[in-house]
Length: 171
Image 1 (cartoon, rainbow, N blue to C red):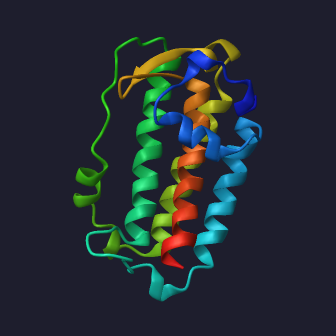
Image 2 (cartoon, rainbow, N blue to C red):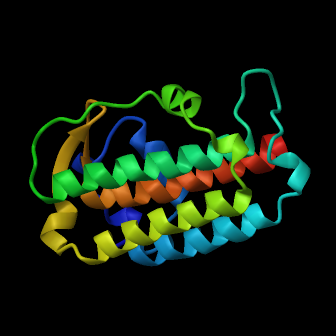
Image 3 (cartoon, rainbow, N blue to C red):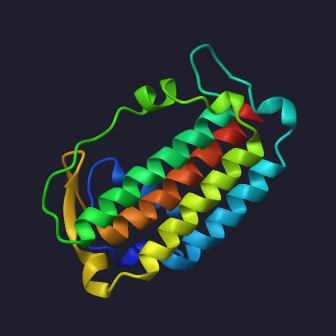
């Protein structure tokens, strides 16, 4: 299943930005490929950059990696609920509150990458378990409709979005 195959009713709002950033690969393959690409990319960042902030009040690279982990957990939880036909609208989350309540900068980069890998592997196993019907189910998150399969592309695109920010503002 490719992002170009998503129907117009499967997502709206800010989710489209991340789906576009995901590219047009195959969902399961790209979830796995993007995991390895991200780990390789982060491992090539100079050690002195992990605690760097390009401006006052901005997150460090470690903060952003933790944000990507937290966000994937939230998106995967949404996908689980919607795949099980739960029609309860799910609220958005305040990413800055999450960032303010982590201790990411005291963690090693290897620890963060291990956690990211574990979360992504869990996401992969979950997505591999879903039927075509479950993948097409739609729920409401952040006041916008989104399908289970669109959420998978959002996770890929969100990760790629932040990798691009690393390149443009931190390195």
